[in-house]
Image (cartoon, rainbow, N blue to C red; front, side):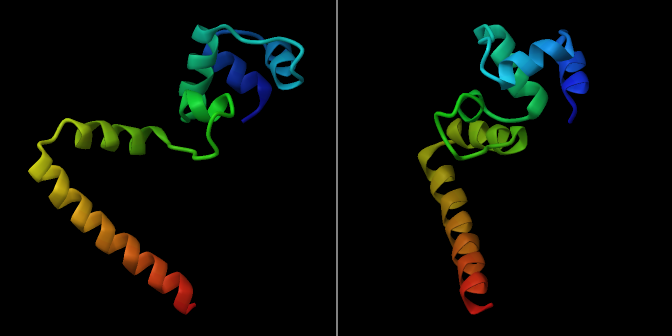
Length: 94
């Protein structure tokens, strides 16, 4: 995404995005939140608190899971664990 495209999405100008990229200026928390939303990443990822890039769809799923009962979570985690094991096995085998 170009600086112009990103700037348009958050309601600013491309030179401002350039200053953020060069660390000549720091965005307000509101602007940083808008940047994260436009880039479809978490604010933690955007500011470098984590290398784990969670997209919006993954975050929505995590939110839904967090609202489930312990029993429902256990079922979800059992399925996820099985899929993760299968994925890891396929990657080791190839």
